[in-house]
Image (cartoon, rainbow, N blue to C red):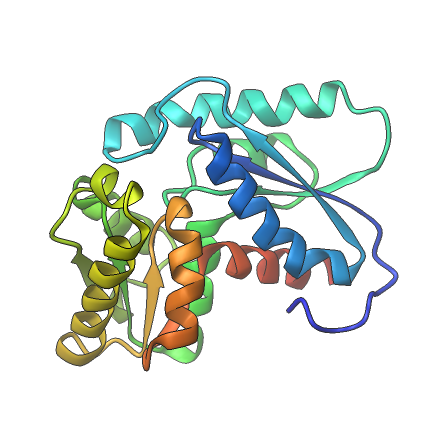
Length: 230
């Protein structure tokens, strides 16, 4: 992904951040642009207009689904040029993805869905590393939704809370690296998903430095978009 020549594809992919943090949207949009622009696709980042700055529990995850839907439908209603060919929901719990998939005639891909798809290829054992303990149950449910529970090695958590780590990128990296090692060495995971859109920059860093195979959510979603568009 992101290194091949441009194809005959043309169009725009919407990346919608269910969190209200515009800096997170910018970070994830840059990652998606690096993957999709060489393939002839533009990326537009959208930020939810309401809801939490960071989704850290099942309540905020459920609440954000409506904000995702509003952001996408409002953009499409006001669109004046450039065909939108796909949507990426850029939160690991994929809020609003299923509803939008039913309403739109274009692919709607979630970064959680895509990460699970990538991590479980060839029935490989996989785990997750994340900083949001209250979402561990939701992540396991998402794995089950995609029929991959048999190969799921579980969730490994950082000791510090997500908002603490969001303010300290180096500590975030160190604690997630430890969670990755536990998932790989103790749980036997053949691949480890860094489970969180706001963790995307750290996921990229871990992919460059970890012995374990790191599944990065945003690039995984871009790969699935390209696979679906063909």
